[in-house]
Length: 283
Image (tube, rainbow, N blue to C red):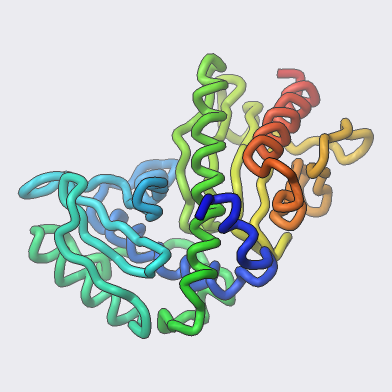
């Protein structure tokens, strides 16, 4: 089944329970990275990559005895894997496993690899209430829901990675495509000028699988500093401007799956919104 067909299998607003379970599960990978990697100011040591081939999240690589290690979290079926030099070493299915049991299992396999336990890490952020409430990875969320959620990450990673290549001539330019385990969005940040992050112009381009703003996946293009909400330029369908709390261009999953060509239409939205954002920023 194609990615686009799988996106339509589950109504976007029905993905909330699967999103909460996946969001909790990826904390395993980021905890392992936090425990074993030196912290960097932008917290990117804790960020995750998305592997379209294996349809899984991967921690940042950890160099240790015996090779380069990472922790992978796959969504469908839901499991966690210790990986060495891109090859699986040990894997654990998470269905009906508690978070505490998952951490204990991961600590054990990390110890055998000569690495520090994930439980040594402290997560420095609060998770959303529905994610925090996940104590066990229940099989009640069907694989189809997790599979559809994975397809949204497939689409996002492919489109945003292409976007990074297309705009690689910009300076300082786009960051690597990463998933951030705090908000669970996958994104690049395109720096448009040198300087302090708080004041220098730039644009975030990404996909959130859903949050307090939209209870469904959505793509976003967020210029920084925030634009004024008055007299914003028109966007092509399915894009619109979000102006409550932040100002950014949005395309929701419900609107995206109505497109004849999901990939092409979303790509055109990202490019048009990015161009509009640059014009509004004067960059």
